[in-house]
Amino acid sequence: MRLSALSIPLFALALAGCGALEPDVATVPHATIAGSHIDVDGDRFDTFRVLAIDGRNVLPITDQPVKLIGHDATNLVAAGHGVRVEVEGFAFYENTGRRLFWSPMRAQGVVEFVPAVDAKYSVHGSVTPTLSSVWVENDATHEVVGSKITVARAPADPASTASTLRSGGA
Image (cartoon, rainbow, N blue to C red; front, side, top):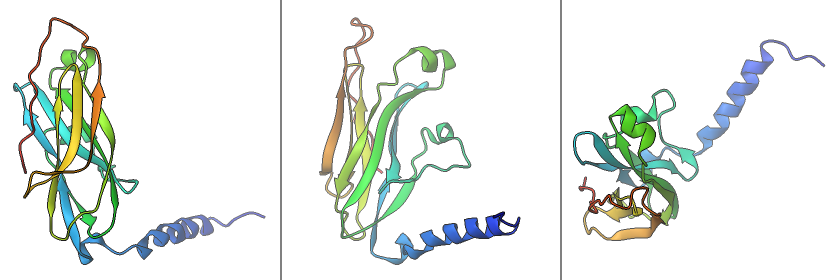
């Protein structure tokens, strides 16, 4: 059996309509979660951001995610029930040579927590050659929600040292 040319777009439209059963987060009690960053030295930005919420990618498909480095995006999350937030923290270098040959010192993972209604949360972290961490904290109390993701590694250059930086609040 051969499908008509019109049936394929109608089938795709029907599948796209299946996602409309979920309520818009802005219409239900919600909280916000934002990324943060540190301008380390004008060439390096330590960026802490949300990648996905409950398995749904939040980085724009139409734009290159690298253009968002150093820009803090804000996302809505439904409040009152558990949420899975995939987060990452890494060092991004403006200089192409550094970007190609220096370690981004990345930490990435999933933080699970129950957002409170109208609360504001932000992603923070620290990025060093030996230990990188990323976490979510409540902006009002500065308490860590969920768990911290920590990645330890041997430094590429033992002579190099870096101080631990805490990202600024939103």
